[in-house]
Image (cartoon, rainbow over all chains, first blue to last red; front, side, top):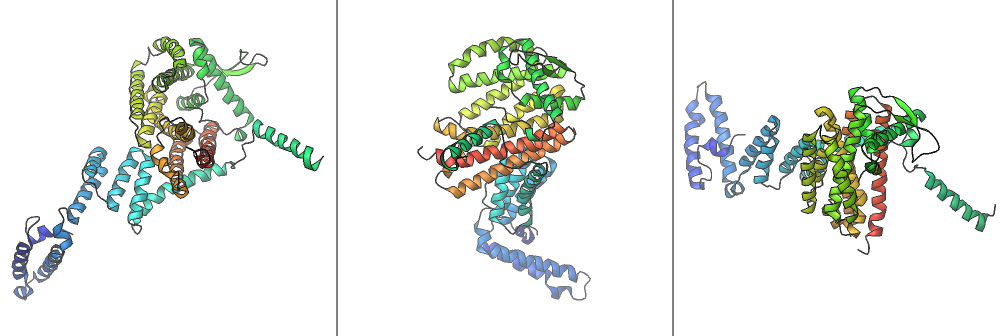
Length: 191
Length: 284
């Protein structure tokens, strides 16, 4: 969805009065009554729907009170994603570091950056954080599980080659076993 | 610091085991040509380096038999000198030099001064041909020391730097593929080493990069398990990447080292850490 400020044609951080005024003007302009028997009718209806949505969002206190609205965030994250796609990891990281947030996507993107760098431990921690903040998100869950899968596959291949845990039987263990045996023989079993 | 990159012996064939030891002897005898002192620092990690390089450049090595003062009775197999063996031995000297350098700065270990100054003489001799690499490694080492001194909290940052050092050492003829193998080996070695030394370091109040993550787990067993599982998964991820790189060589000893040897080492170190953590750090 587009930026609601842009849809209503007002500057960012505009007051409620200004938003309301702009909204009423736009509604008048695109009102369905004006487009009777007009081929542009459908287009106008769509436009009106968009305007209504944008107005509802901006009138909701949650958005107008914050300096950064979610729309800033989505565009910020989009920018970061683009940078990552282009391979410009350093730039992407500095943007994220300048805008510290507490939401899942921030942690997820940070995780991607660290993963690209090969810092797996840190990347995994970020993915876990993203997943914990938003467990329903498929993207975050998959990123986290990928790590667990890789290590499981590796473990499996190691296991398959015959490695069993705790069978490091070197001279020391043999000596220990013999020593224990001797003790037992002397005291209890008496063989 | 090293000695973690080893094969899992029960899984080796007899001839593989003999060949493996022959490489070990080969590196030792090659080093003898430069001087006797660095032979003290010989360890199995450099056998891994030799095996990787040998496969990468498709070198046919020759075996010989000899007696030496460590094994005076029975003649031992060894790899005859070749270009790669020489490189490996030089890198070993280089790394032991830096290790002593680290000891002197880090622990103010006066015992290290004498061998350090002797090694310094050798270094000039062997770094003639690859001065640039030497300077690069030196820079990375200095960075490593300063990171540790400043109490860096990120395991990855330290491990990454150490990985770069090993990457530089592995990258014979500037091969990117080899550098990657070195990098992942280095990262793994650094973290494993940090886990292995953790309890000792805490007792002696030395720096350890895991401190930031494990300090807060002293009272909380569940948090400890959680932190440990993250470490375990990341270590196994590093190994999975490494084993993907090495798989291409189709060498059974290398596969054994990466897939079984390093895996069992990981489990062993983690297991020991887990059992000793609460037991030994109680009074601290």
